[in-house]
Image 1: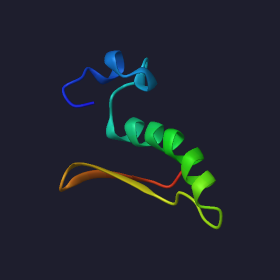
Image 2: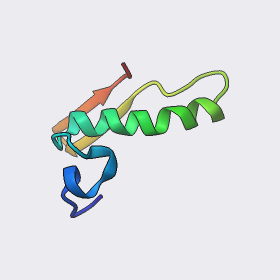
Image 3: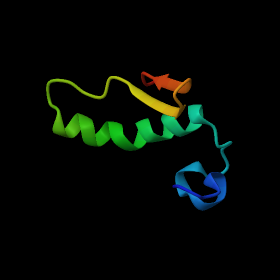
Image 4: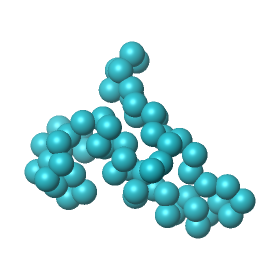
Length: 62
């Protein structure tokens, strides 16, 4: 995704504003089914996406 126009070149971001918040929510949607399939007694708990060391977003699912 490096050096891409995220809301044009990345299919799962089509029509969405390219923000850390939207990115982490889309990453969750992609990762959660696979994680839940692999980890039977647990699952995806939290994703943290860093833009810079002081600018990040944490997402715990819906």
